[in-house]
Image (cartoon, rainbow, N blue to C red; front, side):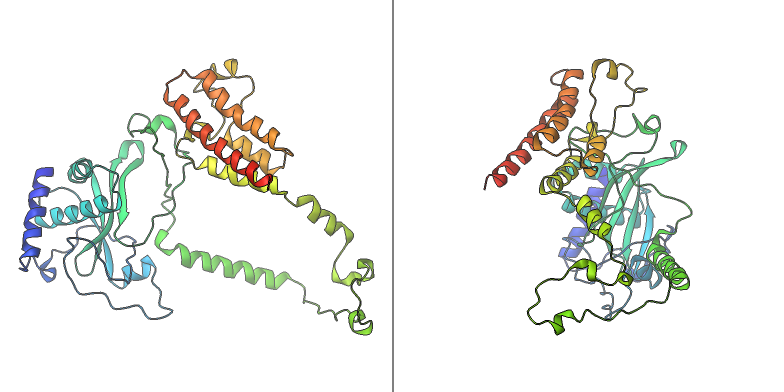
Length: 374
């Protein structure tokens, strides 16, 4: 139905350019068919190309709650479930969402976006303002029997960002493998939804939980004791330091506290290691190295690879400060790439991922050495 959508979009563009009214005015829209959910819209003026002009929502007052749930309750926005049923209203919303996706996802082929948005195997959630204008949405495909949904596009027309996704996939691979395309260079991400959680009220719920914890602490905590300050600095002008053992014991200080702080202190090298491991974990080509290889999925892996290593294990080692030298750290990181190359043939996608991430890591080591030499 892509051709229908393009034809509808052309008709809407001609109407807007000619200054005439659309076929269906904002006031005459049908009653929303979809179930209301959460969403947010910026108070700033929307500058999307091709958007219909409508009455702006009243500006938020200082201190006013601008969360998605609040705007939803006030009627400033609503969420519509949309599918390609060929009705003018549905086609208008789908077309406006398509325009947003094409603008916010410039590297994605426009024809591909249009084809999936209008595809009848896909559905969409449109974020619609009170004026009837779409300001964002999600296009997805539901695999109901397998209990997951694939989000194809997700974007908004303002500076808002979608959060809550992780690249740690916990869903059983047997459920989604073969149903979701795993693109080379792409990052597969997951967002788990718990039916019992009211996601539009998370901020309010967390505030209540925090207050309950503080109330419990106040009920069990001892009455704070205020100790007088040290008088030695006034009594002895010019005193630069004092013996810490002369500090009254009631203050709670003990020599062991200094020892603990020194023991837990991170060196510059260890701090750099933490940063590098974090960057490796989110690298787009590091998806094969996130966790230890599952022997059930690859039975002969540990027969070939005698010294396995992965980013999850590497991160745990770094947090325990197990790499006192740069060489020890580099040795374990390179194990990841060497193991991948020794098990997978040259030219495979796993080989290419290893080469890409190894080159990235080599640049990081070079930067560290150049700083250390200064």
